[in-house]
Length: 448
Image (cartoon, rainbow, N blue to C red; front, side):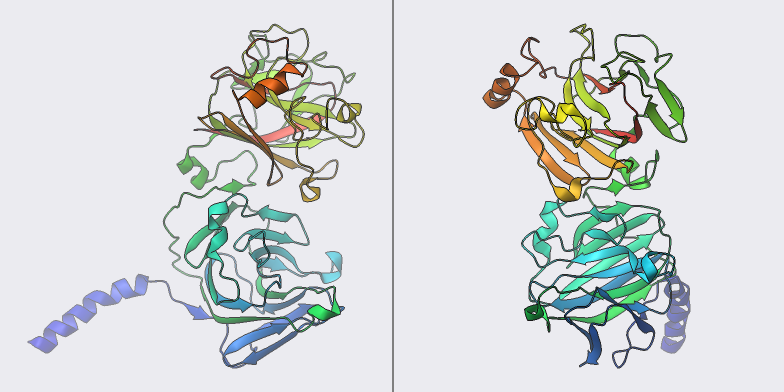
């Protein structure tokens, strides 16, 4: 009876076991079968059941890539890296003759022992650069243990890419540029001969490709590049599209009861200020949301043209009845190199990303895009009055409404004439018509 009962239990458990995802080893622990080297000539060898990568001077970035390509998968890998050697794990990556003569490009799970502590972030190698730095999730910076063995987990399912370092959630990116590609272990180029011989070691490299079960949702920031679309994770967090990508629904002209009859155009999923004479609200005029907002996380993409000027304003109340642009706190959108406004104001407080005429933005070279490239802007207003401006993944300023410092800045600005400027409990979001061609898209908001 006992044997029959055990057999019965085994038969019951077989269907459940069949539904469990199965791990496959990417590294056999003995040699580099299933892998090939690309680009630089750093040294890769197998020692003591580990893949050991060693830097070589005068070589570009080197990559040990899988022979197979992977689309949706869950990857786990352990590594130990010499400090301060930079490295990374490529995924959904490519090397083709028609792109930079075969240079490896694509997503990279960052290994960063430097003081900035961005290990676990997602970088776009040889393409768009940083997509998700740990400035979006600073609580995860201590997860990486310098000089010790670390364990990474990477989940790529559809457009969703999520990372963990030693069990700590680090990055959540939604991006659909490359659906599949190889996985590769990077040995970064070194510029000094004294840095030759630095090593990184990898072991216990395994992957799931079938019956994938994503980890439960966490509470970290989600960054999405999906155009005019909310990812399931963003919907779960409470984001809503402020612009649907097709119509004028939810928007009207400032000081008007309808959307402007001219000066604006919707084309191919973009909302465009049409070029005019460069004047402030002299063509179609500003547009504002029909709804008002208090505390919020606002995200948007924008693209400027040569000498362009525009802005994204918040806490716009329309009570001032200004003859030009409606009054509000402004995230400046500007061609800093060519528009004269960049040299006006005080200390650069009219440049890209600045709180216009009040606080200059930090000038971070990596945050600057070329004319014609899409930028990502973000304005976060917390319930306690703290405000942050973000540009292309970098926080470029912060301040707090209602402080003595804030009032002093207003008193010396062009806004001194407006009582209680910037202090309304809620207001409209505004896109500015300043008479030059600027495009917007992927405008979304989460009320806090």
